[in-house]
Length: 290
Image 1 (cartoon, one colour):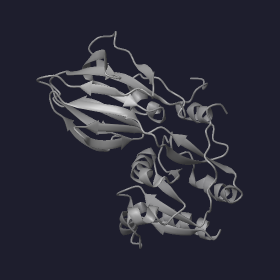
Image 2 (cartoon, rainbow, N blue to C red):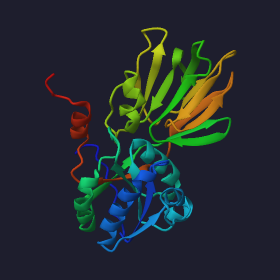
Image 3 (cartoon, rainbow, N blue to C red):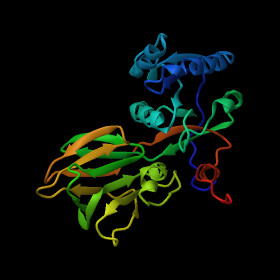
Image 4 (tube, helix red, strand yellow):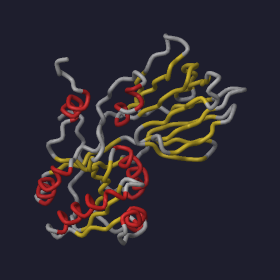
């Protein structure tokens, strides 16, 4: 498939690390099923400590886990996967998502498919592809984002004004409820709900989508990822920065948020048959008759 950039195969498959959806002790039975399937194939299973505590098992710290295993398995939904990918990013580990949620644009493997996937894994019938990661900074405080960075108004009684620069050149001034800067992987998340375009996930581009803009002339735009984008909040205005819906930062008046693409990519482990357009068709029910 065009734009499909696959990493080389795993050097070995001897140990995996598992992270469960937080605050879900009911996943104990699911974990034991996953553990048994891997152990049957002589693949050791190690559980992350907070997940282990939740279901009454033994585990190790996330950092120790990442230093011990060949890849990670996220068990839950897309939100769980986002957190695992960001935390594991510096370790350069592939992440497999097992979907227990409802939508699952990122977590494409079901429990029913797991036995066959493990068999395929052992004969190198899988793929590891790369996903663009955003690097952001606010007054020197750095963060990374897999899906999106949202600038949202802090005071619900007032509109948010945001000035945008691209490569230090004035680009636009947005006035409304906020602004979404999305990666292609995140284009099917908040960006889609706000009327932004769907972008093939292995593309390298930023999607800038205004949230409820005051002017109808403010439209979503897709720009190449080699630009550096800066957002400034003028006097008498403050914003909340929301990273992947999970981390929050305050952007004070006259503060700036800088965004660029990371030189590293996130690694996603998928079944070899995964087809993004088929996923779209299934999740968005394209082609169905009403």
